[in-house]
Image 1 (tube, rainbow, N blue to C red):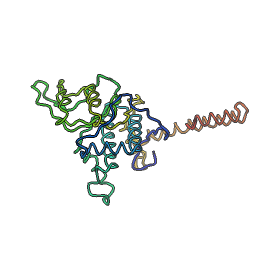
Image 2: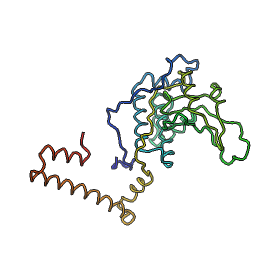
Image 3: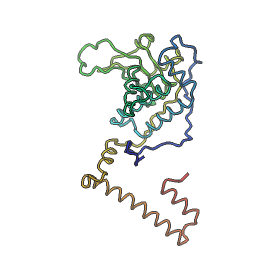
Length: 287
């Protein structure tokens, strides 16, 4: 979307026909929750009754991890924010959240949705495929030499490819999970296998969803994309010189290859079908 002034970063979107396989972690059939009025149960009912909502969030997570490889440390903050935003927007669609100043407020008020969602739940996400993964629930940096204080945990939504969906933990009710917290160095952590067991034992605390594993896509530098968007503006003639030179070389390379293909077709070195296939391949239009 390079021409969109609100998003000066190229985002690679998958096919609209992307099919996501159902989660391979089996969970017992859902049962009625005694706390059906909770925000989480309302969110869960929304996903159960609206398959499109689940499909869109799965697609959203797929796009996020395809474009911002969380193996790069700089991208982890972006991925974390994207997941928080995905939950907030799903909660808005489910009627749990409203715009802070009402539906007639200016568009900028949408920014408050993420804060409203964070007020309800902490969100912890990972796209790792390691069964030994541990979620950091609470950092206590600077106290490595001291006896750690008692752990603190908020109501939390956990997302991981090896979980059967969005797993909710209320530490005041799910004491087995809370008591499984371990202190390691400078953080309280929660092993993934504890959450898997919690999901299997409490299916009413799960929103079925497929969380994609990290595909290890090429590592991009979001800051570089933003710098490029800035300095390619006309007022930055000197600062944008390097990017303009790169763009010119890239464009000229494609043009030269197109000219070569057309010349080869004109000379009979390529059939019309071969020429069309080669041009489509060069332009990224090949099926």
